[in-house]
Image (cartoon, rainbow, N blue to C red; front, side):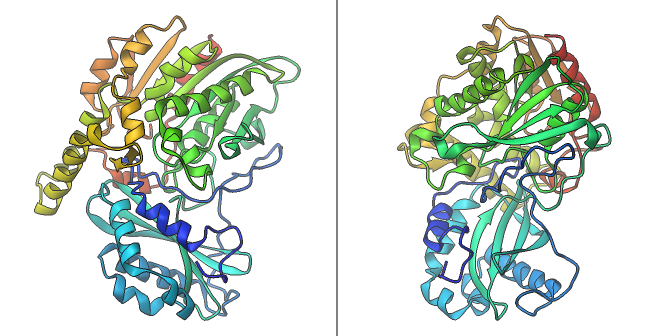
Length: 467
């Protein structure tokens, strides 16, 4: 990025290095981006990671209508997605063009989207202003989920910078089962280390002088934010607000992969993920007015939750939509299910399935800083012998296992494996984000605004308040 870029945006070289790192796209479509300021305490909280869109079509600092900038951003994104990087150069500012290594960008893009599958098209755009610049977030829909790029425009409405970002595409709308006036939120940092790990404490507004139960929310894989944002959906925030409305406090936090400018391989291991969740548990337990504390993990967060419970002092464990079998088994299978959802498997789809399968086959041969399936060799080495079901079976605290019946990422075979650890509850109509729908679930469903099913929130609240 040139010296014309916003001060708090990553430098161009950092952007390219991150893309070239092959972060991949998780099956839930998670993607990284710059962290936003945490909020101060307020009885009617606003989301701490929401952009401020200005999509009213009025001219901006570039004297170009917002809709035109959105179209320009979508055009460049589409060219990237179809591999036309040279064609995209005509949209760049001269200084940016001269400083941009197109082949390096191509390699980074290819590595980043290696597990994304087929490009389906641009799913949406959001405009904001930042330090006097116009920034357009463009969200693309791929076969496995969503990929977002923020394009920074200069005074001539040409691209002066770009960086990948969270595909969150709108302001948070609380679910109907969570009244805003029942919720109080405050921003905290879990530690000075690990980039501070920005977090949000959510409490019931009417807790008075008594104590309330608490839960640490541990999100899915990838460089996820504290809300578990996937496109317009924020499952962890839905859970936090719904639980607060039912008398339960919660703490949720950004992952290291989102918070840190760079990560050493050892920061991506199972032990590192557990360490961060353990710090969150200790912070929540230390707060006045918080009684028993449970750890609740969603997706990969549920996969590691039993290890968190073994490492920290918790009063219960809730596992939501977590794989019960090795990830090297579940991820190729999920790719195959998505490819077959329309009854046919095209050549491009089969190549994608074959790629995911080959990635899974090589995880045991990776160096610590190499990547496959969106994770480092250090991570894969750390989980080689990890069995979350067996770990859960060995816990001495109450456990709660809940899954979506339409979850293509965690299917019946995984739910059956989890029965070895206890009774399994299934919300038949729910997908991996625990949102209800009809028909076979696909990653494209994640781009549609929805909320965590009220039955899930009520069920978790009953478990936590019963500890």
